[in-house]
Amino acid sequence: MNYYENKETTTRVQTDHAVKINNRKNLEISGVKEVDSFDNEEFLLETVMGYLIVRGQNLQLKNLDVSEGLITIKGKIYELSYVDEQQQEKAKGFFSKLFR
Image (cartoon, rainbow, N blue to C red):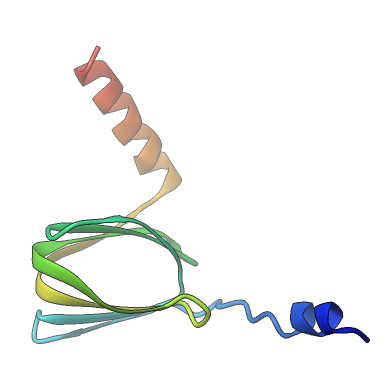
């Protein structure tokens, strides 16, 4: 077995998803596949359970471990919401009508 074969077999796939909020100030999320976008008021995360939107004030990315699928966000947390495929299509339809 050469180096490349060994590397492929040790790739870990994160399948668990957990959300932990401490005092509405620290948010830890596991099962994150990708951070699509973020600013100080909103994060859009792709998780193993679908897209997750985190909204708040003074949000900061404190820790990101891509290999483990872990992210830590600091700031005042207002809202967490999951976007299903049906909701995503409805949102696209609404905004496309609005900006015609």
